[in-house]
Length: 176
Image (cartoon, rainbow, N blue to C red; front, side):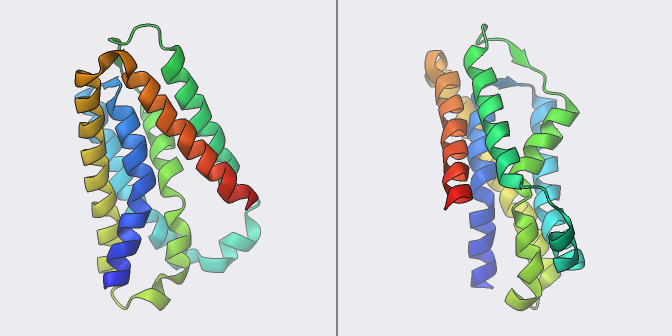
């Protein structure tokens, strides 16, 4: 079960980083709750789908999620930088929140492919993946908000920088 806990932490890091970034914006409370719900559900759902569908889907889908993630991080980071009014309330659409949650959750699909070989307690593992990511995302949103309150003038720059770093990490992963 220690390995499942470590995997849960590892799967949560992208969501944590993105959440810090989102926390530096003036995201409305309802959207925070919706985002946390999406993150929690998707981090449990994608490994479950991986567990169910396994190699059949992997061999038939020809989409490179790394390219999608790189573009998403760059676009959202750039939008944060060009935002003219730092005090503007960011009312993200449900679709935007879903896409963001999807982008940091999809990598957990691959964990599901081998989950039955890692743990006998698959249901507990799936629950742990979702809850851990939800908790880390909550912490990230609050850290981002605290940072924004303390360093409002540079909060968007820091948030965008985190997204650019995530993009660079994914570029390195893609070409490595």
